[in-house]
Amino acid sequence: MKLQALNGFKDILPGDVELWQFVETIARSVFARFDFSEIRLPILEPTELFARSIGETTDIVEKEMYTFVDKKITMRPEATASLIRAYIEHGLYVQKPVQRLFTIGPMFRHERPQKGRLRQFHQMDAEVLGSQNPRIDAELMAMGAMLLQELGVSVSLELNSLGCPECRPAYRLQLQTFLTERFDTLCDDCKRRSSTNPLRVLDCKNPRCRAQVQAAPSILEHLCSACGQHFEEVQAGLGQLGVQYSLNKFMVRGLDYYTRTTFEFITTDLGAQAAVGAGGRYDGLIEQLGGPKGVPGIGFAMGMERLVLLLQQSAGGDALGRLCPDLFIAALGQAASDFCFGLAHELRSAGLRVAMDLEGRSLKSQMKQADKTGASWVLIIGEDEMKNSQGLLRNMKNQEQQQVELKAGTLKSLLQTRYIDGTEFSVKKILS
Ligand code: HAM
Image (cartoon, rainbow, N blue to C red):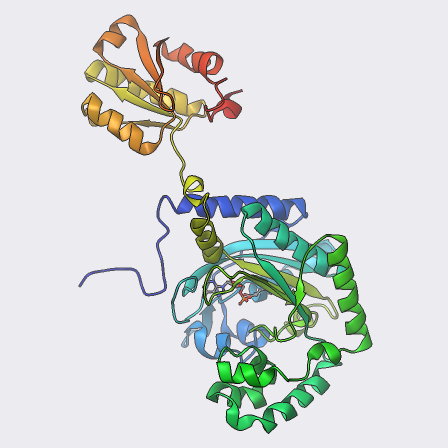
């Protein structure tokens, strides 16, 4: 039997990993600027945590969780519930009234795999716990927008409000009446949803259901005055921060914990998997999971596979994915090879990314290898060079070469003073 990765589970290979690192580096930088701290969470959690937060009748809990039934534990399908569990368990609300936390890692959902949809996928998740202020909603969306802008991916932001336990039940009832009148035209899933979770019918992908709900009552016209005012202020905040958005009254999200603000960052470049990131407010969840009363929360998660796909599709994607050695050392003969073995180590300690062939291949083959790695410079050392303590340093961009003195102790400073000033030499900053 040929052993291979499970369907929907993917290896991330060198060449792609660099893109992932790029995405993560930008995210960490943006999160830091907004004063977020990292939290690392376990992959396995009690099944009940997700049933009670995401909701018993959601697709995630009903069909998509990887659960060890005998142990009542589940591989996390998202990070929000776990993060709140940790927030409550460690009393993080005592340390700071408003906590800004982020976490990055794999999530697991048993969905049908396709482009941009995996069974093990990765999220960068940011949450603000302890503030009701609509400016937090605006700031969080502005942070998401900044992150996407710095990555160079273009998306649109869609916004909605789902109201609160005060105003949503009346809306839900009105929507249910509307759906009952059209019951026969709905798909089987929506027939079921119209009684269990009628709001989910609004974002059904089935064209017949879509056509029917165009005339459905809008939640935005049924918000109570507190939710209405909150939503106004969120939009004012987005305006002040210069974040473009559009309203989408059909956006309901696939998780039950949301209240008020919900949002999605949408792309048209990934076919059916349009959401690059999504989130919203969940003002009742912390209390519902046994935390302190009335502590609100809001957050979002970005899907890393989708961000990486967008970068790969973009013009600059290739260049981003390539981390090249600063220097390739081509040694010819035993004496040169022995010497260069130590030299490479010394240069690496000094901060250079150095590649070297240890197999004693021909010069031609080593130059080919150097070219393949994309090294900026090649240092060629053969028997003659060893005798004169001289090496030949070739600039791989313009093919110019010159003799350099080969004293291991002085080579570093030599590179620094005579070559590192050249703008192409990427270690300039590290060594200076
Ligand atoms: P979600 O909409 O389920 O929300 O997922 C957020 C993002 O994760 C999606 O927009 C998508 O980019 C990515 N994603 C989800 N499922 C997959 C998959 N099977 N394959 C690849 N990417 C996927 C949440 O998870 C909420 N916890 C977000 C949140 C945080 N709300 C408040 N705080």
